[in-house]
Image 1 (cartoon, rainbow, N blue to C red):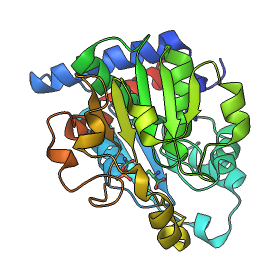
Image 2: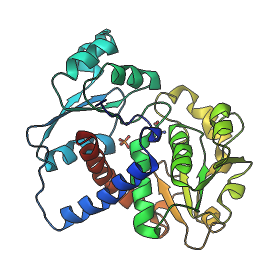
Image 3: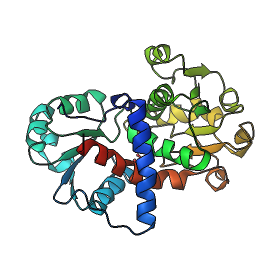
Image 4: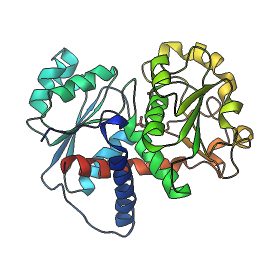
Length: 301
Ligand code: CP
Ligand code: NVA
C-alpha cells in the first residue's frame, strides 16, 4: 500500500477529513477525562523546522508524548540540511529511522520532494503555499462551536497567503463558500481562484467579505520569509483590519479565528481577541487534538 501523506487538504477525501475531525473531538474528550491512550509506544516523529514555531512544535511534540511516542526536533542550523545535503537524500535517511515526519519549510516543492523519497508519512507543518494542519484545527473549532460546515459562508480578510490557500481547499472539500478580501496585488494565485471559483470568490472590501458570514478569519499581514516587505504591507493592508465593528456586519452568531501569532493594532484591533466572538484559544488548543487524530490516521493507513 502506498504511503499516505498530508501535504495539502486535497490529500484526503472529504469523508477522511470529516473522520479525522470527529476523531479529534473524541481525543480531546479523552484527554479532558484523563484517559491514558498510548497507541504510539516506540514510535518516533521527526520534526523538521526551517521556520520558527510555537504552536506547531508544541502541539506535535506534546501530542506524540501523550500517545506514548517521542519526537525529534531538527533544524537546518544543526543538521546537514543547513549545509546543503539534498532534501531527497535527507528524506531517504530520516524516513528509515523514524515512523512519521512533519516539515515546516519555505517552498512547497521542498516538502513534495521530501515526500516523494520518504518511506513514512509526511505532514505539512506550513509551507509558503499551504498550512493544512491549522485548517484542521480551525474546522474542528467551528464544528465544536457551531456544528456542520456544509452550506456555511466563511470570510477571509487580509493576505492571500498560505492560510487563505488552504481555506480555499477546505471550502472545496467540505462544501462551504469562501469570500476573500485582499488588497490589490496580494490576492491568491489567479489559477487557484479560477480552479475553485465554485466555492471561493474574490470580493473588493473587507466589508463585502464579512457581510452575513458565519466565520471571519485573518492572519498576519507579513508572513515568515516576507519580512523585507513589512512596511509596504502595513500601508497596503490598513483597511483590512478585523475589529468588533467589522464583525458586527457578519452573521449574529459569527465566530472569529486567527491562526496566531497575532499583531494587535495591525490585522486585528487591540480588543479583537477579547471579543466574545473570538475563539482563537480553542483554535490554538485544537492543533493538538487535530494533529493527534491526523497522525493516528496516517499511521493506520
Ligand atoms: N499557527 C501556527 O502555526 O503557529 P506557530 O507558527 O507558532 O506554529
Ligand atoms: N501566514 C503565516 C502563518 C503563521 C502561522 C506565515 O506563514 O508566517
